[in-house]
Length: 162
Image (cartoon, rainbow, N blue to C red; front, side, top):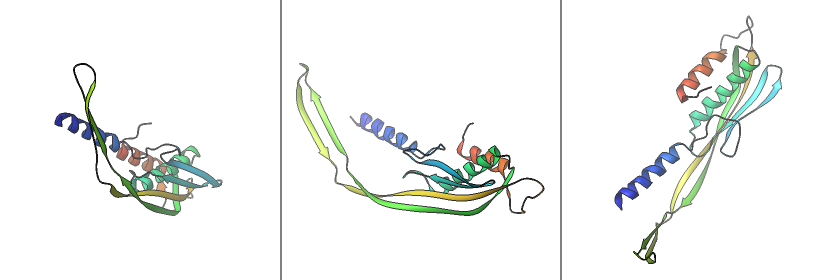
């Protein structure tokens, strides 16, 4: 019985580790969205879920901004403004376990059900918004970021394949 419990426990842990918002367009679990504001200026948003850190939402918003700039032939860009907001919620949950014993005749001999006491957890969702402006040579501000460098470093950090 204990090996089965530990296998189920580790399966849940491994499953939850994959629940953070991935780098993709906005969907039910979060993601990025963007809006053109002018010829070379865009608003970019990355919304995470309860498993996505604030730093990851900032990185993914910056990655999306760099991709937009690259797609519009701007090798450099600056961040005009940026903000990460956090919404925290209390979530209550409990765990129910049911054990059923089946006798050799195929009938149910015993059913045991147990429910743990409710546990309250705080779940935080982070949302990052940035406004970026693209530039071409020779009119590149001194504080401009390299589009290609941002894309390469963030994709390497999170092991994102093209």
